[in-house]
Length: 327
Image (cartoon, rainbow, N blue to C red):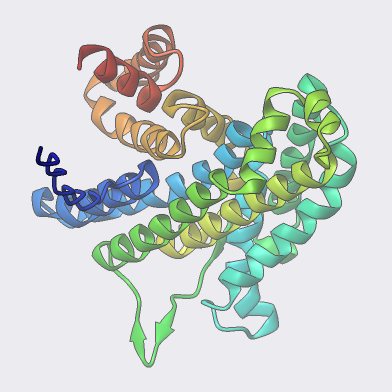
């Protein structure tokens, strides 16, 4: 009797290329930055969009501290002010090129965050919030009162940057510059979130006691997140000063810090793209709500309340969960 012929092996299907969430986020953001200028009716919209990208960069930095590390900060705008005034004062008093003052501001903010963060990050909860609030108020008071150095409440002009004789100016130019820098900032934040350090931050976000039990150096990781957050804020502050051509103490004000916290919470505390969405919402809504005149702030507050009631996890995580339920 003939033996049964063995079936020929079937060639395995080639593996499909699948984008992970990190690259999907970056591609979507890049597509948005590349395509929305087609719908701008005038140059004014380029400047507003550039303001969105700069604000989103600062919000992403705060998301690293609050959303990934679980540390509350009400003084984030203080580092924005440090970055802005480094850009303004560096060329005037140190003779530096204004573009070199962007990394200088980031370095100064990192050093200040390291020195300030070591004692205050030992605090928890509302004690930490009050301590960071005090830091932000201190920076704002120095910038507003030291007239001889900072120009006082009126602020100080910022030198326009030049590259090989070409002066960088105009809303469209700054739109592409700030959009590219935001992409880099989001890429770094997403990589941090997926790295061993990011997983350590997630562990201490859930429980510092549990994280310490499994061998995570809680103090070192909290300080690292605080310094990274400060660098993001300082770069955003420098870009904001260059975009406006002026640095103002309002950049470091308490209300600015509250706005950054609101952006992160509304967009989704645990989501990097949520920080971008929250920043876009809070920058664009006041522009849209000007039709309400005297009731603009009341309508803005009502909309924020509605977002928090119906999308408690934030805009991006909430909408993602809604789409998953319907699919």
